[in-house]
Figure 1 (cartoon, rainbow over the protein chains, first blue to last red):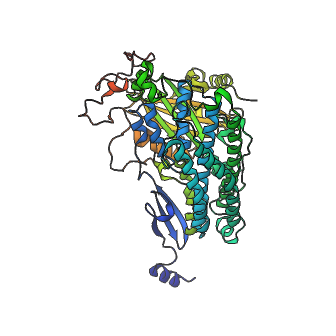
Figure 2: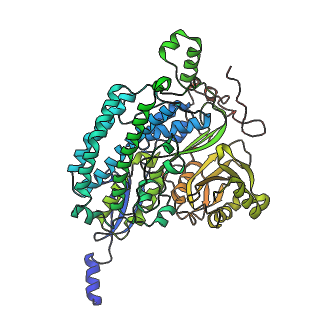
Figure 3: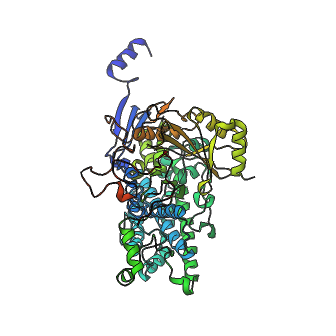
Length: 408
Length: 190
């Protein structure tokens, strides 16, 4: 190109000029409130800058003035696509600090709830990747089954999205027959639907062309960026908290950790899909184990810890001890033993950690949430640099970025 | 060979002598501290040593202890050896007047935003950080909101002072003994 033509190109704004555009904070493709400032050369991404914090609600600060049981609803609002895992993670942290042993039946019930939450989370993420690549049908189809999962939660705890499910030591009430009937319906129907959903995407030419190679990351880089969960496993590292540090009796179950190779959007999709099958396997085993528990253990749904677990209402009216504990728990007048504890669970997006420091007061001295989304979203620039703008959109959705978890 | 806490402790003491202190094992996790100027040396050693290989930074955060004079701000690292599945907790303390701590971003990319968050809420000045700006709060904010001197509740509320949370009155935080050590025996709730 001659010097004069280059000059003419520059003056006309071609060639070296780049444009900055905002993807977010309220763009439909971000699926949450966070901003990406993308610098584009034509359609190619030169650099990206992420801004988070639009819905920061200072949960860590609020938790410093709340008794333990009032912190559960705060955890709901981290990854709100799989709120029960957050709730259970918090209960398990408290139980670790307080030294509470839960009965096996409680563990298995918790496993069912957590695995349902994992399915609800992955199902949304994968179907949204479908929507962003232009296939709306899968999204609407599987949404029926998320509805069914929500109905099961509704039977157990009364709410659907921000569940506040379970209590320290167990559940607030036992699963009723409707919940189990719905669970059976789900176990019967969902595998077929999931297979259909998979057939719709996994070997679909358009879907493969869009996702293979988009947003790839090597295992080494992923580890350095602090990836956990399906996104790390897609890069080929078989790290899963459920296997590495089993909690809630996960060691009793037989399941596999699916892994990918390339760490791109396609592998992330496949890993999440496989994980849903594994979750179904775990739920089936857990349901069977629960049915096998007979006799006195058969109806147990909480540990015997009167200091932390609210007594039944009829006991509060008739028994002195129950009245005292009821009052002390509701008023938050239970002193927490001093200690320092880190506990983690395998959340929808990876290792969800709770770092709790207690100084012997009635609320945590310091509580820190290790939020997987917040940590791996840093890698976004590296994932999309040099690729097309349309790739950035599917990378966002396939990372399963949840604004609530990012901002804490 | 699984890594044992004793082995890690022994390796650290061999390398750093009496610079590493405060060994504890709350709930089974090896916890220790080092002077703040040594933090990178310790982390580098834990990362590179052929037997230790703590190459995954799980979590980085800060804690404010107003009653630890001269060492008010703690920076806490949770490190993980994924191959051996072993976790440790490492702390450094810095004075609140000059909370300078070396940044771990050169070793762990994931430290970047976590250090920004610790700066945002506790004002820890990470030396060597590529882009130490606020991350969750607005840029104009001129204080560090998670420090203990900023109360959560409206100060006109007399029904919600710290006494309700087992920590003495509003002005005195009451959560420390006279010498600044953490209170270990909970007072009677009477």
